[in-house]
Length: 163
Image (cartoon, rainbow, N blue to C red; front, top):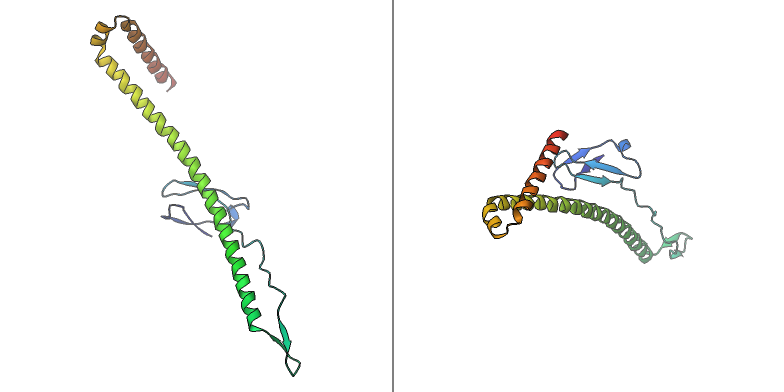
C-alpha cells in the first residue's frame, strides 16, 4: 500500500498488515512529521438500487424497463456514492485538523518558553551591566542583586552536577 505524507513531499510503500484496523501513528522520514493513519474503509453502506422500476410488457411478453427509471436509478446511486465519499473525506479532514491543532498548541508552548528564557537572560545581563548606577539610585538593591547572582551560580553548579 502506498501512503503519502501530509506534506505531499514523500510517498511510502507500507505493508498493509502493519497497520491495524484502528489505525496507527506514522512518521515521515523526510520531514519527521508524525500523523495518525487509518486504513480507508470502502464505502460502508453498499449502494442500494431502487426496486421501483417501471416494467412494461410488449406484445411478445418480453419485459421492457423504462429508460427514465434507469436514469433515475443511476442518478440516485451516483448521489449516494458522492455523499458517502464526501462523508469519508470530511472524517479525514476532521482528524487531520485535530492533529494539527495539537501540534500547534505544543509548538506554541515551547516557543513561549524559549522567549521567556531569552528575555530573562537579557534582563539579568542588563542588571549586571547597569549594576553600579542602579545601586547608587537604589541602595537596598545591592543585597538583592548579590543574592540573585549567587542563586544563578547555584543553579549553574546544579546543572553541571546533573551532567
